[in-house]
Image (cartoon, rainbow, N blue to C red):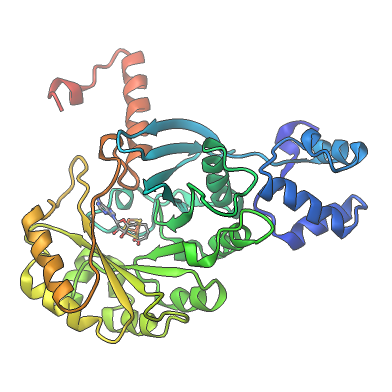
Length: 374
Ligand code: SAH
Ligand code: SF4
């Protein structure tokens, strides 16, 4: 059987794995052993799975792979962030970014290639949705990062890759089934074992799915708020027209497991002259009253042609101080890895631009982009 015909086991649920092996006449305990090798030890080569019989290893190699997405580009930032552009089996690409912080770090994982939504400040929003990522492609991003940092077997403590944030390309709640399946694999205690307390899902506000996510996954919730009234939010985060602020905040109030120890994060992108006034800071505090909440004030990461500018550091500081006075934590998040363009969606389109440029040069067409000195 050629490799293209073999099934990739990464992304199958435990039950599916048991089913696949049963199809080959293998008992369920084999699935448990295999799960351990794939997700606890991180082994991709069946031949190296030495606790399995030789015959079984051969059978596995004939029918399956445990392949990661291919690394199309890898960039390390001066501040220690690392960004991968990953290529999946069909040639499509998505980004994964590792952001270190005090000896630990969060891996920012993509859920879709492109996005159906069109938030004007977001570079991914300028790209059409190509497709959803599969559960295997989402888990595969975590495995690539673990490979890169040598974090196998799955360490119990002192992990560098300690947290997962579903904040990369795409709207995770518009690809709920695949995201849920992937998150369950990532949380499984006999495998990658990153607990729900260390996983945060960021959404633009897909209200019915927020409820489902709370019930079924119980991961931390981050909501991209960015505006304190429906008029502005309709413009900045267009899904607000479908699920306006009152409904969104009701779903946040009801989010299970949120309490003072485990608060909902409200992301607020600071856009110059758009949503950054002192009055809006005060309205923001009033708006989320009663919800166990913290804020992340995000500095705008500019991209070529973006219709917005970021607020000045002094304005952001003042905004944060007002929230602090109202009793809220409001750290200012500087998008990390600026030197590798770590804003979501940028590496992929940068790569597309480069390959378009290459094709034009090969065809003898000079790219006027460069003549303009941009
Ligand atoms: N679709 C989800 C998750 C991906 S976007 C969501 O919207 O929440 C992750 C975060 O990056 C969101 O808070 C989004 O508003 C923010 N973001 C998008 N473009 C940005 C930019 N250019 N600079 C800074 N943050 C940006
Ligand atoms: Fe999609 Fe989130 Fe970007 Fe909006 S901010 S376009 S929802 S990825």
